[in-house]
Structure formats: structure tokens, C-alpha cells
Length: 331
Image 1 (cartoon, rainbow, N blue to C red):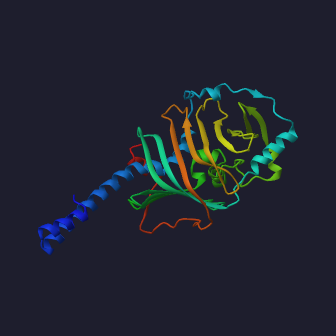
Image 2: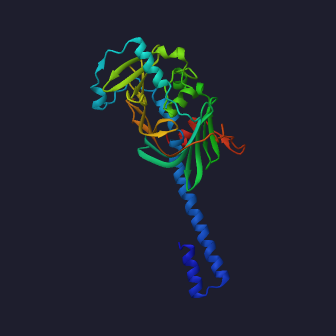
Image 3: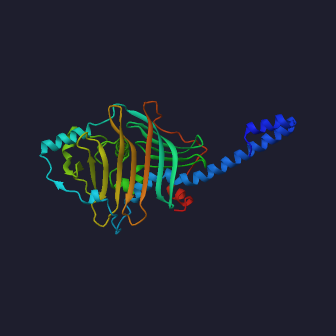
């Protein structure tokens, strides 16, 4: 196919008639449109897993019974736990970590989204992250400058939209068994993206909650662990020099369930009053199935509250179940 400039040049040097030039341009536009539509449909087939990646990661962590434990990096296997500080020191440490928050209540960022472990391929697509505290966490996926998919978390539900096929999935947090049993809701998921300390089942940390964390040290990191969480253990690994959370590790208290969910933070940059991670990686390992990971590489961070708190789904869109969409993915 010839670019427009070449076509105009041919017209100039060959004296094509106006009708001939119009016909040639029309064929060019039709062929270009057909090619882009094919590319878009092909890309959407790969984007389905990306849209459902976080719900899949969270659900996969629950289906790990009788699985073989994944081999951990040497730095994690050879940790040495030393006696924790006294109660007052532990309380002060927890307080400093809990108080490390952005001064802004909203942010946007350009992001590169990567997913590995589903379909035997590494999927990658550009996107945009939008977060408005206590209102919404939204990841928009884009192709050729258009929004082709959206994954949104609000206090009431999880929303996944496939704009190419005009369909969507909406589910309450209580509809996802792992989230329900782990007492995880919007506020816990929000804290993951904001790189903040949280207690499962609590909307926000209160001063009276700080004593509910135990504090220990492992390989130059301070580890905060909520107590009295009967189903799962949560371990927040923090940098003792600046109190930033570098890793959250979630495991079942049932020894038969050997899977692990981890949320890792890296490449911290100064933003809105504190160091903030620009590389976020979620992973499920050791479930007996292929390990799954989702990475977000952030750039062009901007503090703003000009963010819609929720997305309105067109009445022309068809609601699907998660099972239906997974079926289209061949999973």
C-alpha cells in the first residue's frame, strides 16, 4: 500500500484523472482500515487475559492445595530473623510506615502493562492508571490510540470492559471466593496500588489498630505482620531507612495450600511528598500450575483529582460472566 504523499506525487507526474485518483485513494483507505481492524481484533484476543489478570491472580492464590512449593530466591530463603524490638519501638515503627502517604488524593500515570504465564505468552500493551483515593482504581488499556479495554475497582465492585466486542463483566468483591475468605475488599486493593500499609477488612488504619502488627527484621528489612488473621498471613517488607514498603507477601495459614501471592515495588521516585514506586509487579507462584505475573511500569506521574469516580457502561454493551470470557480465551 502506498502512502498518501506517494499517491499525490504519482498524480502530479502521471496526470491521473481526478476519478482515477479518488478510486486509488479509496482503495488505500479501505485496505488500511481493514488491516487496522484485523490488528485490533488480534490484539483484543491477547488483551482479554490482561483485563482479567488481577482477578485471576487473586483467585489463583486460593487454588493451591497439595501443590509443590515454588523455589524462592536465595535472598529470601536465607533470611535470619532476629528478636523484634520492644512494644513501644514496634508501635513507633508501624506508625511511621502507616503515616507514609502521598499528599495528593488522586494521580494519573502512563503505564506499560505486561502479563506472563497465561497462554504461554508474554503480553504487553500500553495503558493509563487513574486513582482517586477511596473512590476508584482504574487501568485503561490502549491500542493505536484508542481505549480497547478497562479494568476498574470501586468500593462496590470490580468492572472489566471489552470495548471492541461491546461487552463487560461486573462482580462484587463477595462474589470472588478468595477475596471474600481473605476479607479483602476495595480498600485493601487500593492500598496495594498506593503502596500503603493496611489491615484486611478495615477501610483505613486507625491509631488503635497499630498495635495489631508484629515487627521483626530480616536481611536488612523490617517486616510488619498483622496478627489475628486466621486464614492468611500478610508480611509487609519495608526499607528501614525510609519506611517504604518494597514487598507484600501473602500465604495461606493452611500448610496444604502452598501458593504465594506477592506484590513487589521497585524504582522509587520522589512524588507528592514521598518516595513512590514506578515499577509494580504482582505474582502468584507455587500453586502447582504455571506461575502468573502482572507488571505495571509507570511514567509521567501527575497529581490530580480530575478523575471520574466510576465508569458508566453503555446500554448497548452485553454483560458477561467471568466464565464466559475465560471460555473465549480457551481457559
